[in-house]
Image 1 (cartoon, rainbow, N blue to C red):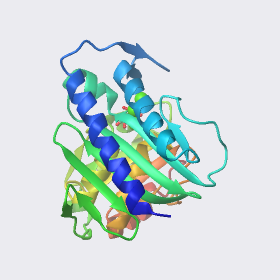
Image 2: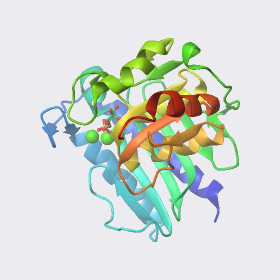
Image 3: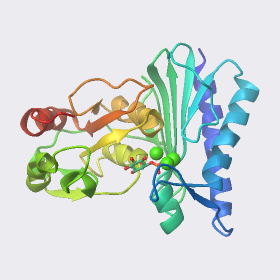
Length: 265
Ligand code: IPD
Ligand code: CA
Ligand code: CA
Ligand code: CA
């Protein structure tokens, strides 16, 4: 498989999609809700997903596509080449802030991540990696991750998980939030993953994400020695929703062992 060629196409399409998004900033958005009043989608999320599907199908008609907005293919096994697409990760930020969102693409072969791209459109920062070939931010090679302890760590998590909620016992995560040097909540899983890759933060966790949220970021983080699992410390399956813990190598082990082992995640 010529991964360089697929990567070059993906990069070109991500940049073009970014330009469409930038041009949308001056236009009125059509905003709809999905599963609940805070689960938002816009005409631009849908347009960008359809843009990628058109481009991919033109060149790689045998590849399969899973996209958040549902314009991709129906399939149940990971065989062959699968593109995981989040056209806008951080739609709420896109609508309210016109920043703090990204395009995320993950390209998998038989369930194994080969290429990851996360594009911070507003900052024109493209994080990308081909498995075994290094991870980059634009043209800059990113250095391998260094270890960090909880007390020196900035950990990204959503405030929902330390307030009463209908998914987990919220008391479980309070010790981790208390012991960390600081906590952050950016509202875009894909960028929070690449912030771990660049060392801007040290770990990110979430109770429930989908393959299009973590597909691209995983390849980038793993290329730098970071660890990506669910909150039970198990490898993710790239066709299922799951919880997520992304962290620097030693920190990942410490968080699982000292803070997460009693949770029913
Ligand atoms: C969401 C963002 C958010 C995370 C949600 C995701 P979307 O993605 O990544 O940070 O907390 O769970 O669904 O819907 O904006 O693509
Ligand atoms: Ca969404
Ligand atoms: Ca998302
Ligand atoms: Ca999205």
